[in-house]
Length: 342
Image (cartoon, rainbow, N blue to C red; front, top):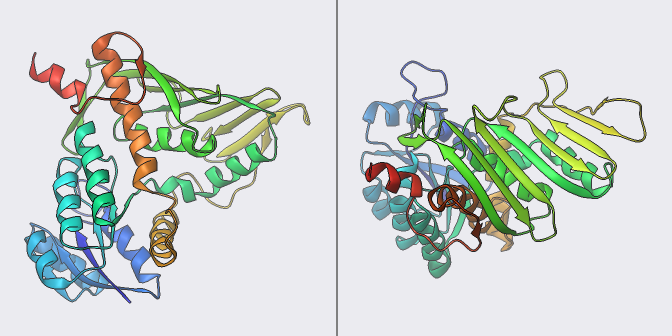
């Protein structure tokens, strides 16, 4: 029986005063679904949040200081459900305290150096580190990968995605393009961001408009368009030499296919939408199984770091005004550095 703690209770999604999506509550549902875990503690700087979480999910102990929780509770698994600027220090503290598995919310961190540090510290300590790119477990995305592997659009040539921003939402879409392309590494990135109409999301400034183009080692090209560059938010399109797959065209047709076997679009039946909450539970169950068996979890830090690399490489391309060849060697966030310098 694995002892589980939560850092950052927050408030349930759409409840009074909520500023996020209540991810800790979704993580908790995953642990409650497992016969191998027990939720024993929660830490939140707001005692009201911790108390509400305790009442809702039945944890034994509450803390305002997560370090005190780590010192006293002998935890096997910790979920980190705080804003990105806190992730690195919390992940490192968990790893150094002997936690065996750490499940952290995305995006990874405000800088590429912090993202790399989390991965390195967990590798050195033997802690399993995952980041919640939960859409890998969604039915539309799983079905899409199955269609690709079955040759439904022939050989994959190009992938495009649109969303609000590169950092908070884009991390999901970068991750999904790796998922669809069999985790093939990226060779180079060229991109541009514009900070007009910039916004702040979970304490991080994101661009008002951006474009990221990149090439995988197998020759497939990818593109992510954000903000004003993205006329169709949340859409992913995959192009092959014999057709196209589109994800997110509408709620009525979250997945559709066009190829030479039909005269027009074919709606592919899936039993859930793009944002099904069950994906969070599947993510937790997968990390628990990986911990038990010793295999790489689907949401491994190694995979998450590749998505983070594309985000920061796009920022770096904008700073350099040129192509960036990978691996990326910077440690800062070029957006933050440029803004700080005026």
